[in-house]
Image (spheres, rainbow, N blue to C red):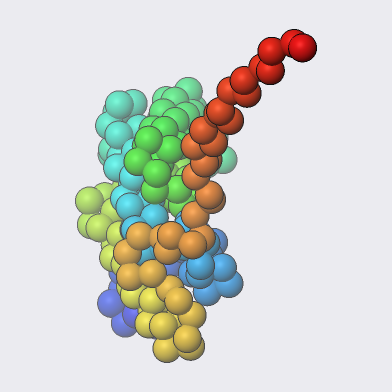
Amino acid sequence: MAAIAVLTGQPLVFPSLGPTAYLLFATPTQPAASPRNTLSGHLVGVLSGAAGLAAFGLWHTPADIEHMTWARAGAATLALTLTCGGMVWTGWAHPPAGATTLIVALGILRTPMQLLDVLVGVFVLTAFGAMFNRLTGIAYPLWAPIQANRPPVAAEEPPAAPARRSEPAA
């Protein structure tokens, strides 16, 4: 990824890519490492971060994490709330996307091209992860998490036992 970033001059390597790489390569069969959760989670993170920037009028304000303002704190809070809620609502849990949200809401990456670069970086890393895991014999999903890795669904209650007839007293 870093070589591609150097060759293209684009910010394809950013902090939340590290924990995403860990999930893809160290815990590839976990639901959070599936391509669906990885790609969709970061998309939710980017969109939520952008919503935070827009809601607080920070699109054109450079990042300054050393001097937190109420507007920046509001943007980060709104963005994280939207990201967490969005991932829970959709079932696309990917914890590193919370960091992506902060990268955007804090203004570290905020231009449309930079936001696209974030998504391209996630896509390329996910493709590398899928190829590596499949080539090494790991049952890595092509999209959604593999069913066997999902927590079991609560079983229905067993049918009630038939009522016993009471025997007449002698």
